[in-house]
Length: 452
Image (tube, rainbow, N blue to C red; front, side):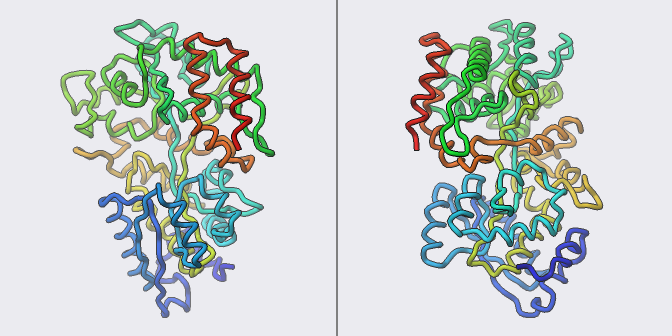
């Protein structure tokens, strides 16, 4: 498929991109790149990267913004019309379905990954895109959901980090003292996707999934009961009311919660870099006090799954079957190598490097990522805001990142189950003591089995 694998290896070691495409460089080609990063500032960074690629290779890239809500339908229509772009930046949910439909050139993507060095990529994003011996799309960036916690209070009480159900529950007993301090702020608003996301994380942590290789898989009663009991414990240690992302951030930022579950997009806000979501732990909205007192956990384990799991969201470069393959591959390689910091700088606080370095410099990209300025109203690099071990935890979570249905090839079905919000509703009934654990497990199995 890709005639110049030696070239890929040279790119991976930093050889000038003037070598790209060898003899064909004299015959410039144009390719089209669809991206869901359509905000003006983010689009400008991608256009700058395309200009750098054109300067090095003579091959131009038309950067075309596409709304993520329209990406699926537009791609399907373009495929039917034989008019796909060459490269598509897309979320995880499309990788395997598009490969199965023939939209993606999985061999081309696999050649890029192998040429750059499979061992230089985090294993989680690669396994999520595994398809029939190939890699459906090239992993670009990702993030893992985090337990954000008051490391200073944990240290004062001699508590272990909240990386297991047991450790969280021990921390609740030691730190929950409302209204001065709530042990947790759990998601309890049933119709919010935030609750769905948090619950999937907690179910994964205990090794529980509603899908198997053949579709719906009955929930294990014992392990699911452990999840229900844990979630009830964190909900009971939360403030009253219908809670979702907004309240969890506000209460933690006020210094009134010991633990929350959130995405890494909280990191710049936590450090006082965004006026619209400033910490209120003291009178200074630019304070870094709370950031200094905070720790994070990405890999989280329940009693039935001691290895734990991280809930991950990963984005990919898909090379299509309509592509000018060699130019598309070269552009993806550039974006993942010489242009990788430009790629991540689009939103560094939520774009963790899935490729931590090269074979010769294994930590090159993760180190450079920590130096990219983040923030909105003020800017600062991650390394100036958080300790190195915390940044290692942030990036390392991608190694074990998981989602329901990915490994089984049932991501679409799992997504329908999540979107039905049946799990949210039934878990809330259990939290409110309207039903017992056995009835909750039976109700989830009944409702989820009818989704197809």
